[in-house]
Image (cartoon, rainbow, N blue to C red):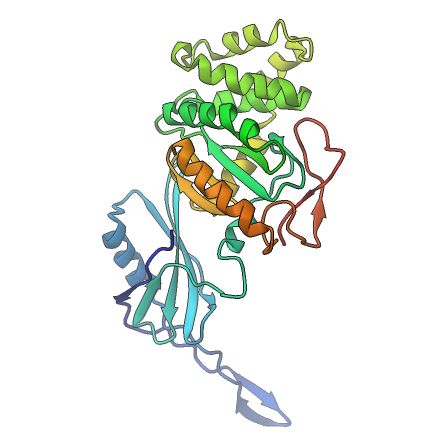
Length: 330
C-alpha cells in the first residue's frame, strides 16, 4: 500500500537572511550567514489550498523546514485544521524551493512501517490477546460509527478464535464529533469504566455497539448507568461522578492525538504491525495480512510486541498492569 511519490512544480521566491555584523579585536567582520530556506510559506499555503480544496475557514499550518531524509530536500510538515478534524501531510521541498515531493521516503534497512509503529504508544489502552504477540493491531474507532460496529463485531468474533496466541489488539478512541454527536461522551464514559475494570470496559464496548441504534445524546448517560448497574465490578455512583466531571478528557485527547499524528481521518482505521487499513475490512482481508505478518515476523522480528527491541514500557490489558510487560517500538 505504498503511496506513489508525485513531483509537483511550485514555490518560487526566497527568504533572505541578512548578514549580522560582529566586532572582533577592534575590527568589524561579517558573521557567517545562516543558510536561508527558499520555502515561501505564503505561496505554499496557496498551493496546498488549491491542491486539497481547503477553502477558508480551514486553517493551514506549515511548520518550519527541517533536514530531510534525502540529500537536497527539506522535510516540511503541514496540517489542514477545521475544528476537531485535521489532515496532516508531509512534503519534501527542494533546497531551492522549486520542487515538492509528496509521499513517504523509505529506508530499505528498516521496517517500512517503522514511523507508524513508533507513534503507536499502547500504554493505557484497552487490549485483548497475548502480551508479546508477534502481531499487534491498533484499532481507531468511534462508538457511534456504524462501520465501526461491523468491524468490532468481525474482530471480536474471529480474532482470538483464529489467533489465540499470535495477536494482540489495542483500542484507541477516535470519535468523529462533527458527524457523531454522542461519540465523544460515549468515549469519555468508556474511559470512566476502564478506570474501574478492564473486563467491564470490553463488556461496555460490545454493549454500546449492540445498542447503537437506541442511543441519542439525551439518553446516553442513563443508558450507561443502566448498563453498569448489574455489573459487580462497577460502582455506579463513582461512574456517574466521573461522567459528569469529564475527568477522562485528557485520556481521550491523548488517544486522538496519536491518531492525528498517524493521519487517521476516518473510522474505523486499523494498523496491523503499522500497516494501515482504512475503512471496514472483510475478515478474509484482515486474515490475509495477519497471516503474512505472522510468517514474516518469524525471521524479521521488527514489529509486534515480540520485536526484539530494547525499550520496555508497561503494557496494559485494561485497568491494571499486565503481569508481562509489552514490548514497544523504539
